[in-house]
Amino acid sequence: GDSVTQMEGPVTLSEEAFLTINCTYTATGYPSLFWYVQYPGEGLQLLLKATKADDKGSNKGFEATYRKETTSFHLEKGSVQVSDSAVYFCALTRTGNQFYFGTGTSLTVIP
Amino acid sequence: GAGVSQTPSNKVTEKGKYVELRCDPISGHTALYWYRQSLGQGPEFLIYFQGTGAADDSGLPNDRFFAVRPEGSVSTLKIQRTERGDSAMYLCASSHSGGWTDTQYFGPGTRLTVL
Image (cartoon, rainbow over all chains, first blue to last red; front, top):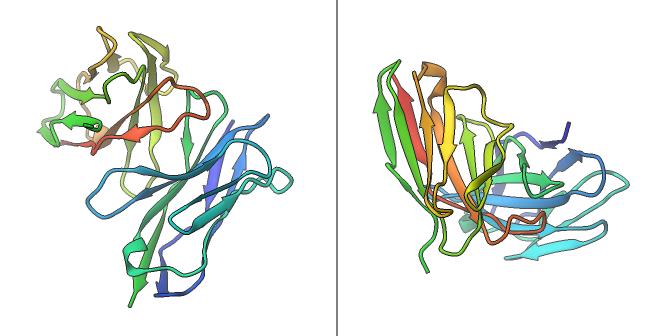
């Protein structure tokens, strides 16, 4: 069945460090891929998405490229800030009916 | 505009009791989703509504769980004979049309604790 595997955390980085959170997926066909973020005390919100191979989603300095050949959608940011501290979830859907989420990666950025 | 709201924010109940969790989606959104999120895990799909009908209920774990959306807006997730293993955060999300490229907007969740 469809599934998402993402890098286990927690991840702790210093401010201005480079961030990568790995995400790989298993699905038939061409799913849409998403990164959601959950800031402390808040609900899940969409960070970025990509709907076809080689698409790059970007938002708030974060980027992720849909790689069909490696079934990956790794999240990157060149220079993290304290305000980026949150839990990040990778997700996919093929149909818009069922969405499959990874287990989440907790990021803490220290000044 | 108003986002997705869920009530109550917290619910504590005893094993064997019946509970109802409510979701108010964003106005005009035809698609509504329920998820369950256990501690340290990602959201797990439960059920998807398109309008008033349950288009996909394959994620409901057993027949103690049921959800309705009678007028195509507000939805209620109902859990009968609650068990301690039902304790989790229950999330609701809505999207404009439910397409596979559509963005889901999540509510803050209802934390259910079964004693």
